[in-house]
Length: 137
Image (cartoon, rainbow, N blue to C red; front, side, top):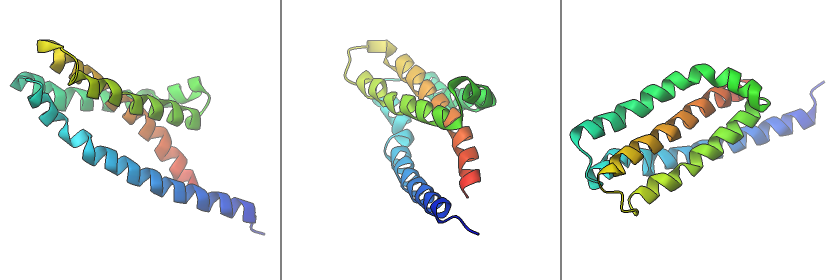
C-alpha cells in the first residue's frame, strides 16, 4: 500500500527543488558569469584575472572530497546543505562590497579570496544536495 503522506512529501520536495534550481540558475547567470568583468572594472591585471577564473574552480573541486566528513561533522547532509548554502549566499556581501570600498591595488586579491570561498561553499553544498536529490527522485 502506498503511503499518501510520503507521496505528498516527495511531490513537495520535487517542487521546491525545481524552484531552488531556478533561483540557482539566476544567481549564476546574474552573478557568477560576470566576475571576470567585475575584476577588470576593479583594475585587475591579466595574472589576477587568470587566478580569478582558475583558483576558485580548482579549490572548489578539491573541497568536494571532504564533503562527506563535513556532513557527519555538522550533523548530516541537510545540515551541511543549509549551512554551506547560507555561507555561499553571504559571500555575495564581501564580493559586492569590494567594489565600494577604497581597497586600491588589493581589490582584486580580495575578490579572488571571496570568490574562492564562495565556490568552495558551493562545491561542498552540491555534493550533499545531489545525494539528497538522488534519494528524492
